[in-house]
Length: 243
Image 1 (cartoon, rainbow, N blue to C red):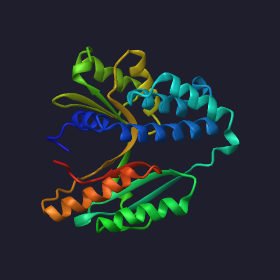
Image 2 (cartoon, rainbow, N blue to C red):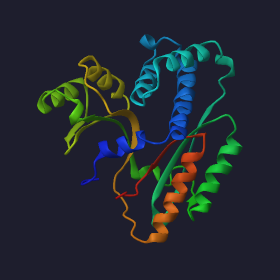
Image 3 (cartoon, rainbow, N blue to C red):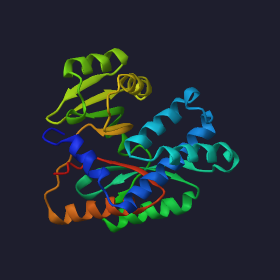
């Protein structure tokens, strides 16, 4: 996605309104609950929980909210009934869209996701229909304005910890890892007090699709907006090359 600033995109996402911020906190709260259920409430012994806490902090979630979420989940593991579900489909002009959700009602979530695709003149496909166009990677973005470490030193720190790739962009550094190495690399950077604008395991498109027709642009925006409004939807990945 050359020519586009990943850091600027992330910054833009994080400067959303309070309602959107509330949704992010809800999503992270569910992720905390699942992580605690699967690996216990102690972050020292639960790498998944450590990753979710790092994600919470990068989204400016207050520490007391994080701790409250962990305590609540620890005392309520039998009632944590969220399931992770994934939907794949197509937007305008064959754009590929993957939707990941955490839900306590799969029928409701499936209907809402299908409705979002239908209203944007897209279509839900079968499992695997578009995921082969994406690579699952750990992605860490470090903003240059926040980082005092020299680029070469940062690169060596990341690669020594197990990162696969290091890319310097105009305003940021992008560090890519395998999903398995993500926690180790993130923690190595954390130990060096390197501020991370974003750190998560994500789905990166192998190629991007540019849309020029106004109808297509309106339709894909409609799909993404409706998915964004759905409290069950955790993450949306697509290969639309946003300008």
